[in-house]
Image 1 (cartoon, rainbow, N blue to C red):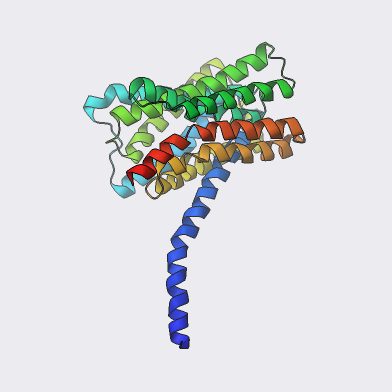
Image 2 (spheres, rainbow, N blue to C red; image 1 turned 180 degrees about the horizontal axis):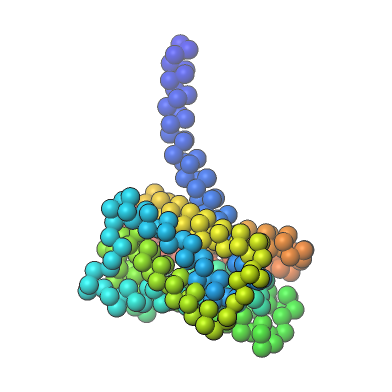
Length: 314
């Protein structure tokens, strides 16, 4: 075999593997971005009240989304027939859930917040059965039982007494996961034809403005008292986690099956627990590692029947 033939073979092999490598790196980027989001929220709410922090995050992200819409020539307006759906997305995907997450992290660690939110795909499964008529398999029911049983043991092993503040924080985070799950299912039913830039741009801008103005009135924050660390966290959340994570996620959505991509929600809590443990100076106990693994395995099981069906269809 000649040198030129060998070089050509290597080049063709590299071209075949390069897209897979890029996709894998982008998948890891999303996991890291969303895995560090929870620590970013924790740092932001150290000196910025939850409502104000939620609003500032989206106000920072809105100009970039608007630029993308202008560059791509996408409309930022929902169709007139979808104005009710537009209000639903603005309130139930962006406004209320992100305030609840910010509020929850004032009482719950960033790692535990990520674990609590990782149950969101389970609620998607339940709402899909209720509103889309999708069948829930026995193995999925077992996965749900394992996941929530492990979550209960995590709360117990972490020594959470579920006093008023802690209990309110846990409820807020779970409520945010439920609302996001409902929004995903309703979007699949009513908003599948709406482009992703249109879907995000104006709702993020309006949600940010509403949350910030309500925060000014209710929380009356002392803006001069916001620490540099909190400002940096808000910038990271607005530009990297919201915009960067969004762009990469929807880029991958066109290249990976939804089932494979949904495992982001199983993987990012691992990063969140590790990063949060490092930042908060709390070592990961054996119980937390064990129950977290069981929780993520349980929630992963809920996806397997769907994946098997997709393979059969292929």
